[in-house]
Length: 293
Image (cartoon, rainbow, N blue to C red; front, side, top):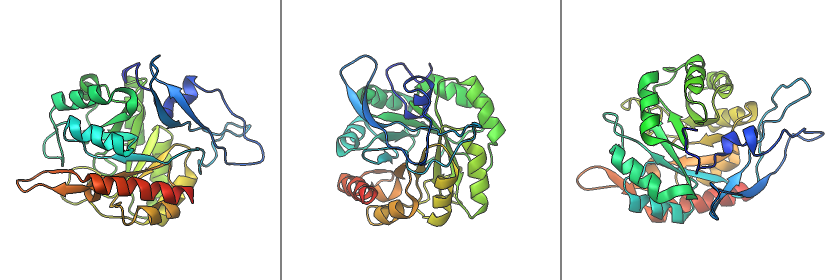
């Protein structure tokens, strides 16, 4: 398994950790448990996501099929110390952006590996790429061994067929596909990607960044809410989320998780940025409180 045997991933739980569940009169189930990681005594919070089936094997809308605290994903870690601090603040996914030529928050591959080694099984390390070249992506996966591979090239630059091809080439590597939410047409796009990806992340595309995300701008949450209802994979909501608006976003969309880069970071005088840990803690607390309400 390319993602490493010491990491548990929620998106692949249905392959071995739990058997099929038949859902009767209700479309919502709650499953919450802690899983032992890699045969060690360490455990991490996880929500098992179940792809519900009808008798004709047609997937039903995901809605909220998890229990426990809502997942929080934070981009983009710059140092080992920052990653561990975000982990201590309650993050579940730590986003890493290996150097690819001009993306916000890029870090060298050796720093990516150092962060992964320090984090271990305590969280999932999500590695981002904007590449559309299958060979380049495969090389990146071989070099970083991510818990999850986050594909976020420019909108529609990678087709669902291309994602399916990548899955065949990289068995065992969960794929998170970015969807640029622009309007109602994004619902059909999300449905198509949900057939081949393990996760969706709903984000906002910026005109000056060669990929979907890092815009700091919100999109139409009503479209995101419709996507959550329409697909049967976990959906992470991103795009301009902050400690101030994450509660409203969670109540409007009811996603599996939330993601933040811009509005939980502070700019450095000489360029670049670091996570603002006070805002990180507020972001996580406000989002989870809204999810529980």
